[in-house]
Image (cartoon, rainbow, N blue to C red; front, side, top):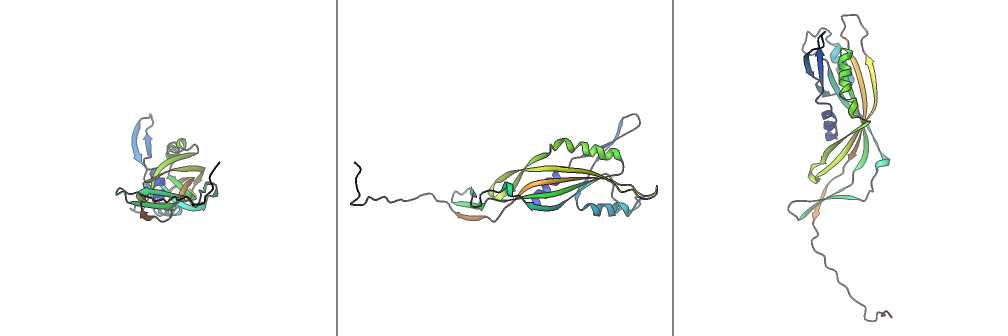
Length: 212
């Protein structure tokens, strides 16, 4: 589960916002930070200090994400008796693990900005890559040398404007993107010896009939 959270956060770790003057020249480039946490947490931090006079205020723009739930995916189920095998470098030990259980994991990404232009700049760096999914390679079980292709599917995009006060109140425009990660949950790993030699005894009954 931790690897899926890290994978999802890394998808949006290199987003930037550019600022331009009246003549269209770029005057500033801001890297948008991202952190794990619920949307309500960021909203409280924003509203606590409208004038940005204290260090607790959150600088905008900012990204926040959280895992909101998960559900079993029967359509991706594999044969329950099937196993994955990995031979250790010593050549004498085999690691075995039953195939994983498929789960669809829901993630929600929040884009917090104070002006509309910052918000659309961030969206333009995300939406073109999801058609509607983006596939990432994840080393899910390093001890088994198991690498899986994990699709992340964009399901919906919504807009919210939290400005409800006077002109001195800090405004926050929030874009909410809902994603579905098609993940796998793995069971325990067991070790056993490697079978290198087998002995089979054949015998023919004394009174066995012969073919014509």
